[in-house]
Amino acid sequence: MNSRERFLAACACQPLDRPPLWIMRQAGRYLPEYRALKARSSFLEMVRTPSLAAEVTLQPLHRFALDAAILFSDILVIPEALGQGYRFRDEGGIAMEFRLENTAQIDALAPANAVPERLRYVADTLALLKKELAGNKALLGFGGSPWTLATYMVEGGSSEEFERIKQLFYTDRPTFDQLLEKLTAALIAYFRMQIAAGVDAIQIFDSWGGIIAGPDYEAASLQWIRRIVTALPRDFPIILYAKGTAPQLMDQAFCGARVLSVDWTNDLAIVRRTLPGNVAVQGNLDPVLLNTTPAIVQRETARLLESMRGTAGHIFNLGHGILPQARLECVEALVTTVTTWK
Image 1 (tube, rainbow, N blue to C red):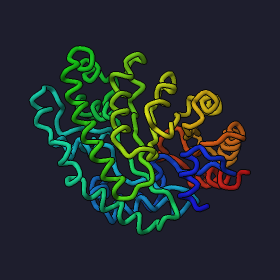
Image 2 (image 1 turned 180 degrees about the vertical axis):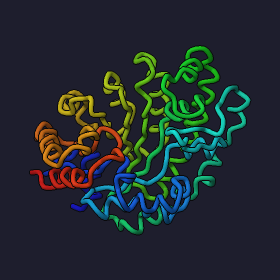
Image 3 (image 1 turned 120 degrees about the horizontal axis):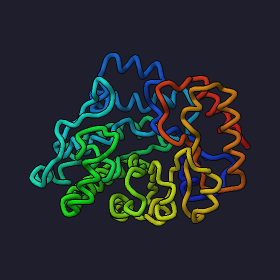
Image 4 (image 1 turned 90 degrees about the vertical axis):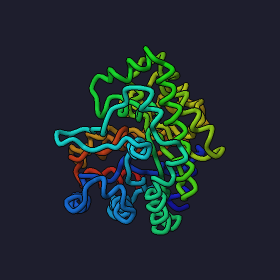
């Protein structure tokens, strides 16, 4: 069984001798080869240039025995394709070119059928990756959830309190729904394009799902995710990651996603016993551990693996993206512990 087959078997909740392994947002500043490339090309240049995006995607696989590659891109390519560009602030965080403030601006966003052509560079990147991986490693595509993308578009970038998007949700539901309808249609077109380009799974990042009040999560986010999953090919592996939404895990289990990716604040073994057996789980080591020592990483990784012993449908991962401060020797300790575990 090669890495791709192992990954897909875990998505289907088949028993395996060890869980497949990949690291959420596994490329990045913790890799010296990434920093070297970044010194010559901006982040946006790397995202938009297929040869560079493919190179960055593959960098972690050249170093570590990971079972899957995740496309190097950004969730904000969707707002950009719709006509609302983005950049990185010098002081940190995201800045959109403008913020959405009225229905006229939402009406002016590009239609969903423009997305595949405007993001053709993503399909071209995936074609390069499929050729390079040759079916031996799983290839994952991804995108943001409609709610998470809407937070950036309405707030005008990164936010601490998310006041504007919450105000829109509570005071003008028709306009909120208008925006979420557009984003949902755009994401369906985008994910269909990625599937046609050969990805083995799609991960939906609902990174800000936890900032809306629990009783409103369905209306603000989950219903739109459910629409996306329903519009994609039946039984295609969809992974849902929604940070800070532990109370909604059971509802998420019935949204159609095959895998729920769980943040590090949850006890993964309890989550596994609670969720239906046909839904796989992914996670959930605290990313900060990779900033400590190899011995600590080995201990905590083994503890998580032991807690999941005897279960099926587990994909080992971090509980969020890898941090720039991660130490290479700690990443190696994690990979070695998982790949040699029996």
